[in-house]
Length: 419
Image 1 (tube, helix red, strand yellow):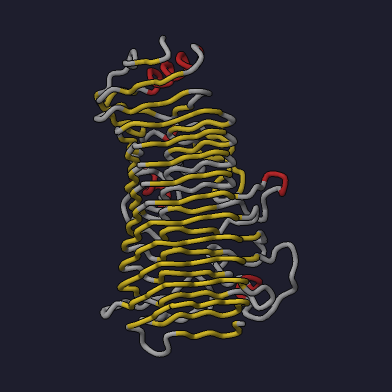
Image 2 (cartoon, rainbow, N blue to C red; image 1 turned 120 degrees about the vertical axis):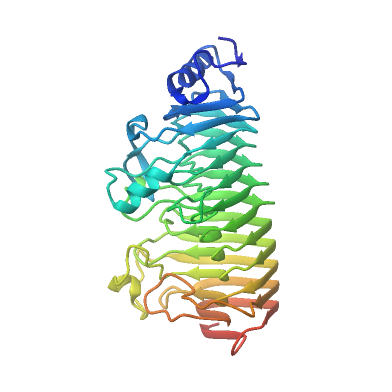
């Protein structure tokens, strides 16, 4: 087979016959020839899990649709990091480990057909976590460009411990009620560029992660050197999120020239006691938000799967140790948020470890006239808010420069234990 494959021998492409073997053979034979591009012509290709090889580009021509198999047996059980810890999971629809120079490109579509997986998840009948749509681990020079990704069984694009990752011009759409169908989740990755994407999903649109405290420290790694630019985010739990798996640190993050519409939170940082790790040097600028529940949140009491935990929930000071999370040096500038609902901002640090060095400049937040009420963040003991102002507690060195809050009920700024 030549390095530029125009057809996939043996593929039926009718959306009914299983084309997994034909697609995987095309990938493997191209790799044996030294690498190149496997071109998928227009058609509907039913497939199970596919593994890329070094120096392979999988190119989906316009009209090409990869359809994820509904049979769990078509997704082998592998060991992989999922939600911060290593465990047995179903292999992704497209992925690989320890690769170099891999790409998924083109104007075609990858449809994970996740509905049966979502149903089994809700029913609690899954033995192992669901497959992700695209996930590479310990790989270098990873590119995803131009494709449409839809109906992912779980997280959509999830590089883990990769370096030099580019995700650009990608459209991701998952139903609003689909569980854990995050858009793009770099996990302990270095040098990541996410640009010119449209993301409309059932969980967070973009999330940066770095493992949890129960993982072997030798297997943790930071998520650092991340640039997120020129993206539009719709619906979902958060526009750009850091956490809550942050035990390996998250640093050096730029978010710029983005539009958020209808996301629950805008720019969200979430962690908790016990998790440890440092989140630092985050910059967000030139962003427009509309119909967001809370435009800005930093929450060090995040209680997902820890509701009622005394260590996590305690509002009094606790001893500082390796499990104490730190958030510092965060900047927000030139941001407009209109029709916000619960609060203009919700920032809550720990009394023993306040959030440090946070600045807002040229930020305007307008609360919705018909705002809904709700709890601003996932944390024990919080009361619902509606049209609340800018709330901050347990911060050191908070700077507000040309920050406007309007349409709120009560005081525009409520600052407690803030210096």
